[in-house]
Image (tube, rainbow, N blue to C red; front, side):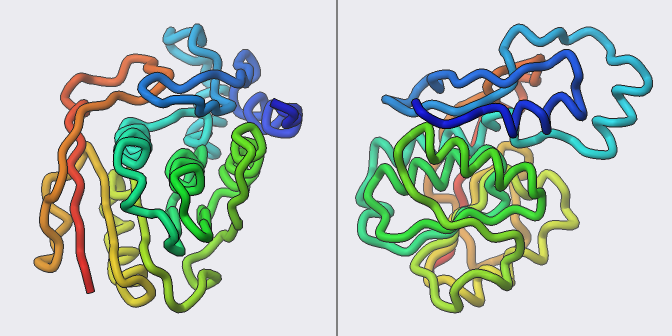
Length: 219
């Protein structure tokens, strides 16, 4: 694992001074490692100034969120879903889905996130796993014609719903995985798969978010 974790460590400590980044094997996945927040990070209430920093710049990328984990597990089990395809991971966070798609044999993989720290984390995590992903900050920067788009743990904020139409305009096939929504409010999608997973490290996530639904639209 030759990747240098110092740059992303600095980004994490700017928000959470007591936290550290660790390269760790992700449970449920074979031979896949991510640089994530230390699992023994305290779940005690944060100091007011730290809480303000977290609200201003949340380090979502320091966790492997449950829907992304469930997606990566599915891709390891069913690599033919992405093999040979041009794939984009929207709202990539730690990069787990993009990395899993690359390792499963996708021809070309793009990872997109508006958070520059998430893109840095994705780059470092791709290096940890010896794979290549192309980074972009906005959907408009993606190729106009993609085989697939994957969106994991993006619709927790309902203001992100317009992303669905944006990616449908660029991809033949769109997969949405989420444990926090039961309806994506688009009749072209159907539930094609369900799985159970919790965010890792799990710093107190409720079991109600264990069930991950996979919605699919084929154009």
